[in-house]
Image (cartoon, rainbow over all chains, first blue to last red):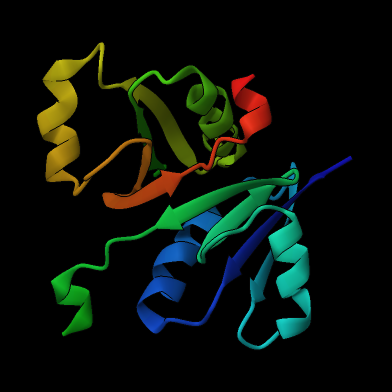
Length: 78
Length: 78
């Protein structure tokens, strides 16, 4: 059975492209990968909180939360 | 050609097992995944710094740094 990997974010444009690289890197053969925009799917905030998500972007793998902080480069913000 | 994914850590036992779940989740068909213990491989600290790594654990995918903060649960520390 595939494990579940959920990537939560809040729509920051720099981070979306950067963080989706992490989501994309996950082996789709072993994981069902889902990307959730919590700004648009407010109904799922409680679910994320219950999984231990304290900040976004975060990746929840098999119920375990990983908070990903991408330091956006100055170049990316130009 | 496979992209390179390097997972840097510093040996914290709780984090090693937790963070390796992230490294393991990466698609080995598309990425060469390497795990580097910077405490043991001090010669690679400069390489990590050059990739933009500011803290560990961090994952560098295709040259782009992602800082992963796993909030270790109290249970994991018991």
